[in-house]
Amino acid sequence: MRTICVINQKGGVGKTTTAVNLAAGLSRSNKRVLLIDLDPQGNVFTSLKIRQQYDMYDALVGRQNILNCISTVAKNFDVITSKETLVKAEYYLATQDNSRMLLKNLLSKINNYDYILVDCPPSLGLLNQNAMAFCKEAFIPSSTDPLGYDALKKMGAIVNEINNTYNHDIKITKIVPTLFDKRNKICKEILVEMKEEFSRLVSTPIRMNSKVKEAPKYGKSIFSYAKSSPGAKDYGKLVEEVLDMGSIRVVQEMIA
Image (tube, rainbow, N blue to C red; front, side):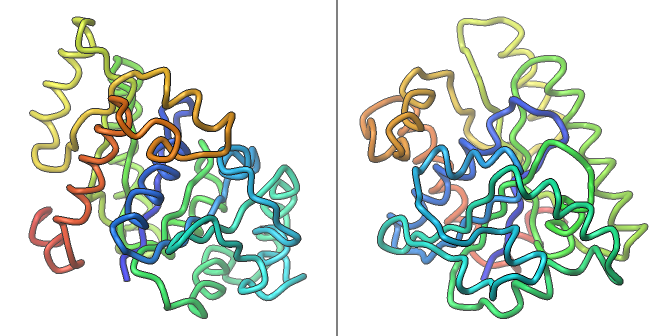
């Protein structure tokens, strides 16, 4: 089972869009996928319009068994959503012993998926530290502009620092250039810099596309909403790349 957090301390770079569409695409490739929302903004719920009696907050504070918080979106595609109450979970975590391992301990009960994806908030708080303690891989969506690229470089240093400080072993295995406009000179320049700096980790860029922005309004992935759109083609290529990475062993060889 591959465990992947979709993370960036910068907001507005397409984390939830990437997490939702990657999860949907993998499930369409006959992979069993669980998508977990760790962002109090609850954008996974907004994007998929899933009704849940219990959510991630209930699991983290011990109100419900985490298995009761799982809902089905489609064949092979399950989710655990969140909402604004998750903000209170951060305070709860701060009072617990071994607070950075709580999510890992909860999710150790779940093993019937090929992929678990965690959509992370734009912060470096305890929720994200829990995500990184659980996941073996980090995917970093990064907008193709100077501020996005600066945040991307900082995330690399942050992951290394957290690994060293807390004895984690998470690896950045994919960088996803987002909001790419091939007509824009700076977008093209930043994409070149990303590829020079991070080599094989950089995925196919996700082009700016109105259909990607529209899909959450209807509670659909880009594949369900506009399967022939540029957005669907780009996320389809990302799915293929992730599938081609295969096992953790292959991932480790890529980044060695």
